Length: 468
Image 1 (spheres, helix red, strand yellow):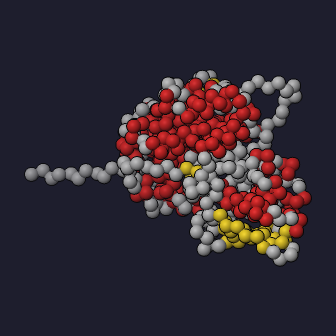
Image 2 (cartoon, helix red, strand yellow):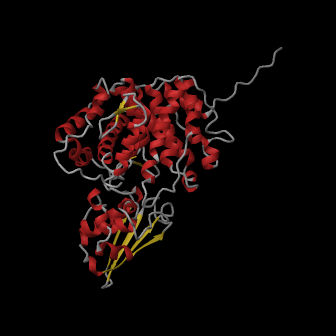
C-alpha cells in the first residue's frame, strides 16, 4: 500500500493571496467603504497641496522623465506618465506636508503607498469606482496586518513602517486592479518583499522623509505587473528563515498576518488636523487646551514639562530646528507655536517663524520626560509652570482625529478645501468632493484624477514652491 504524502501547509503569503484575490466589493463592510471614501478625499487634498511643495515639484519633474507611456495622472500637475512613475511621485506629494493619515499606533501612513499605487493602476486599467474601493480596502488591510506582525520590533530596529510594510499593501491594491490570480498574487508578495526598504534615518533639514513612500508605491505596482507577466516570487517571503519577518522584526509574530482572515476587517484609520508628526499631536492638544482655558502670559512661563510614554519619549526632541521640515518633527517647536498662534497648520510651519523670539524662548523652556504609567504609546501629560509658581496641567490620550476623538466628515471636507482650493479652484474642488462621496457610481477613476489639474495662474512672477 502506497504511503500518503502529507500536504504541505500553505504559506502566509499564499493564505493572504487566496483571500484577497477573491475579495469583492460586496464583501467589504459598509463601514470600511465609508472609511475608504473619507481617506480618499483626505489623500487627494493632501496630495494636491503637497504636489506644490519643492519635494512634490521635484518628484513630478522626475516622473515626467521616466518614459512616454501616458498611463496615469500626476496629481497637482496634470502630466500623464507611466503608472510606476505616477505612483512614485504622487506618494511623495502626499507625504510632503505632514498631513497624511495615520494608524492608531502612529506607526505608519496608509495612503501614500496604497492609494498612490491603486489610483495610478486604476486609471491605467480603466477601473471603476467599486474596483477602486475594493483595491483600497484590500491594500490597507494587508498593510496593517504586516505592521501588526512586525512592530514594534521593526520600528525599534530603525526601519520605517510606511515603506517597509506599505509595499505589501501597494502590491495588493495594484494586484486587485490587475485581477491577479491567487498564484500570481502570492508571487507578487515575494517580489514586494524583495523590494521592502525604508529607514528611520530620515529626520533633519533634508527631504529624506518625504521620499520614503515613493519607492513603496512604485515597487508595489512593479511587483503586481511582473507577477501578471509570469515572474514568480518566493511564497515563503514572510515566515522564511531569511524572509521579511525574520530580517525586519525577529520573526516572532507571523500568526498576526492571518489572524481572523476571512472575517470582516475593521480598518482603524485616523486623520491629522495638524501639519506635523502624529505622535506630537497629543502635546499640541495639551498646549491648545491650556491656552484655551487659562490664556497664560507666554512671557511669564518658567517651564514646560511634557511627559511621554516610552514608546515615543525619545523621538521629536529637537529644540533648535533649522528648517520647517525639522520643525514638523519637533515637539518643542510644535508646542511653542501652538501656544503662540493657537494652531499648528501649514501656516505655522514656515522658516520665517523659526527665529521668532517667543517661539525660541518657549522651546528653551521645554523639557521632555518619560512616564511609563501613561496609558497609551502616544499619551502626553503637559505641565506649564508660571513664574508665580502657578501650574496649568493637561493630559491627552486620544488626540483630535483619533478613533475616540474623530474628525467629522464635515471637518475633513473643510480640511480638503483648505488644501485643494488654492491649487485647483473652488469649482474643481467641489466636483472632487461629490465624485469621492459617490465613487462607487464612477465608471472611470481617471475622471477623478483629471480634476486635480491646477487652475492657470494669473501671477506674472513665478512663485517658488514651498520647501517641504
